[in-house]
Length: 82
Image (cartoon, rainbow, N blue to C red):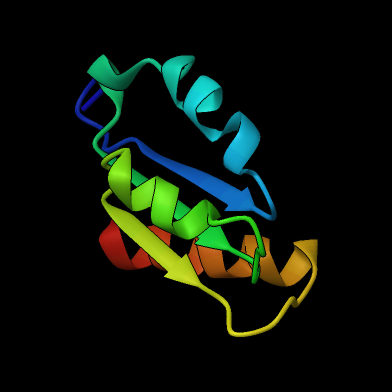
C-alpha cells in the first residue's frame, strides 16, 4: 500500500519472454500489492515465465485479441482485485 491505497501493476504482454525479467526488476515492488500479467496468446512462453518469476495473477488469452483487448483484460482483473 502506498498512502493507504492499493497499488496494482498491470502488464499487457505479447511475446515478452525476452524482456519480462528486466521489466520486473525495474518495478518498485516495495510499494506494489499485486501484479497482473495478461498474455495475448504469445508463442514464446511468456505466461509460463511470468508464473516462474512469481507474478501473482497470470491470465492467458486463447487467441491474440490485440493491445486494446489485452488492456481491457488487465483493467478488469485489477478492478476485481481492488
